[in-house]
Length: 76
Image 1 (cartoon, rainbow, N blue to C red):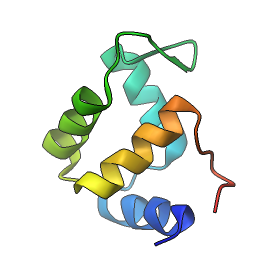
Image 2 (cartoon, rainbow, N blue to C red):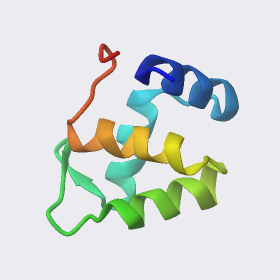
Image 3 (cartoon, rainbow, N blue to C red):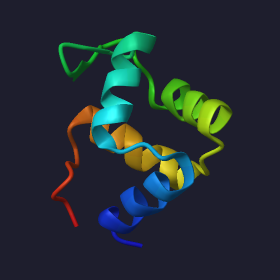
């Protein structure tokens, strides 16, 4: 599945897009000024996304990649 496919499926399931997840991650303290904080671990973010949004591991990792800056909305 392409990164865009992951984002589309996440949006369909949760009603939230990349900007929404960035804002929620900031509220949760995983990011500061749009950057992932040094103490934020992938496992913690994945656990949050699985618990709060019922995302699978791959979809949660896609959001982690987005928050970490590895991928963005234009990535394939």
